[in-house]
Structures are given as C-alpha cells and as structure tokens.
Amino acid sequence: MVITGRRADRLQALAAELADFPGERLALPGDIRSKAFAQTLMRETVARFGRLDALVNNAGLGHHSSLAETPMADMRAIFDTNVLGLMALTQTAVAQMKQQGRGHIINISSIISQRPLPHNGVYCASKTAVNFLSRSLRIELRQDNIHVTLVYPGLTATEFAQARLGQKGGNRFGLRGIPPERVARKIVGAIRHGRTEVYVTYYDWLFTHLNRLFPRTIDRVISRNIQRI
Image (cartoon, rainbow, N blue to C red; front, side, top):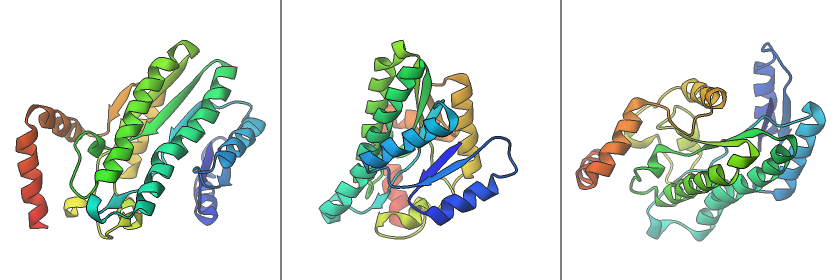
C-alpha cells in the first residue's frame, strides 16, 4: 500500500498504525496538484512494488459558501485539487496500467454530486466533473482491462467539514456522519468485485433516486431543514 498526502507527520502516524497488518507500506508526502509529484509517486510505487494494482483518488477539498461570496482563489483551489489533481494522477496511473495490462481506478465522488445542496455549489460542480470524467474513462479504458469505479460517500465522520474552505463549522444539518471504516469497506468491495458505481448507504441511494423523481419536493425539504439550523 502506498499512502500520500500533504502532511508528512500524519502519513507517518498512519503507516505506524498499519504496521501490524500484512504487507508493506510506503508513505510519500506531497501535493497531488503537482504533475511532477504525480510522476514521482508513480515512479516510486513501481520501483518499490513492481506494479500498480489500484489507484484510489480520495484527495478532496470542500467548500461552504454561496457562489456570490466565493473568492476566485478558492474556486481554483477546489478544482485544482478535486479535478485537475485527480486527472494528473490518473493520467500517470493509466500509462502504467496499460503497460502492465490491467488495473483499477477508484474515484471518490460525493452524494451531493447527485443531489446538490445550497452553499456547496463549487464543490458539487467539481465532484460532478469527476462523475462524468469517470464514466468517460470507463468506456475509454475498457479494452485495456482497466476498470473505473465511482464511489458516492454520504456524510462521513471525518475532519473534512472543519478543514473546508469558506464558512467553518460542523457537518451539514448537524449530523455526525457514517464511520470512515464503512466507506473503506465499500471501496475494498468495489475493487474485489469490479463495481461500476457504488453508494455507501441505502438511504443515499434512495435520496438520489427520489430527487430524480421529485426534484421540487426535495428542494422544499432541504430548504426547510437548512432554515432550522
């Protein structure tokens, strides 16, 4: 397993936490917004393990603000991380996977790419871009034996809401969210079984499909709940 992120201390702590599990781990700190780092990450991975079985594009930057109040610098940071960084790393991974004749790309989207929420428009737009990029890639790479999976986590109990740009605060609607381990199990299952698009919870799936059938009703429900918090 290769783990990466911008904070070297957190990576080393995670590697230590995983030390009792089978297999080897390689922690490489860096910023996926850099194409040069994406290439370094791939080169170091192949040098250590000889191949790349699966890429999980989990890095993401959130935002909570109305579009009218969102600085352009924040918009660029979100798309540089959530879309362009993902593209750069995926492009590098695809070259390696084609060479070895197989691979699996997991792109972590969001349930609100399917049902946007107010004051999250820029973030929702970035994740919608991930959705359509992934669906296009799935067809492009089919003949190369490279699978592409979209995963739609709902509200998850991580520090994501506290670290997002824009207005700070807790998770939407004051809810705690599902354990991150549950999302991780879905990701592992998607890799094992070659899933195409994965909802982490049944109520996220239901919410998405109800929205497609009754969009104005869902708009009213969301609006009333937001006014209460």
